[in-house]
Image (cartoon, rainbow, N blue to C red; front, side):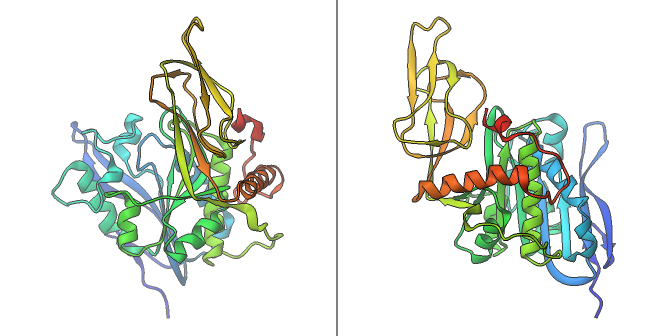
Length: 354
């Protein structure tokens, strides 16, 4: 029996076809309409309906490029199920190169939304009713904030076995057990029992090839795990492709000044190890930043000018730190040696470390 067409914003996408739909969202002061672009690939055969979305924070642009590369993958010709790609959710923030909406609201705190509420509430309502309530799985793509570079990582509520399955399949070196924040896309999806994972990598308003490559590969791996696309015949990845952190801890500057980083992204650090130095321009007052715990550095503040109390490092803690280090080693080697799922060159891992 043939599948039913997939409907979005009044457009019907027939089985075996793909189509870009412009979902009307609002207008500018000039009366110029704005749309959220959505590409739907509706397979001929039944299967999961996956939404992959990015730029819910408008300045987090790595995910936009990840989705573009996923959509170019030749395996999608054999798609089972439906892929709904939303590369730019927060179209207002994307155009203005800012995280927020024009009224300074965070769209990722506006779910489930309200048809007659704030601008954020209306966009959240639109995304929920037009797409989210029709899907079975979600991958939400994010980056770090401005000047904060996140190591490629998955954040998820792992109580749902299907969510844990997706997180492990993605293949990021680190998985963070992240609680649900009220009003977030992830929290609302969880309330609907939709398995959802968040990929974090890179920093706002910057493309990074390592992050984009690992993100595109991760999305394709999840689709293979869900049997949406044919399984690639390749050597089985080791069990330590990803390691789950038990918790994470931010490290903050004790004084105002100029930071000189010592530890780098992805590095294993021990409790009490020097992470950075912070000093005034003349070096008359200087403070050593020490690691409060052992773990892996998963975020670094790239802006040397810091205020007292400002977050400068984020460290993930593990029950087996050695296993986390193995996962990092595998991630580095896979970037150099693995045949890419999305055909892109990658720059040396050292570029990401330093």
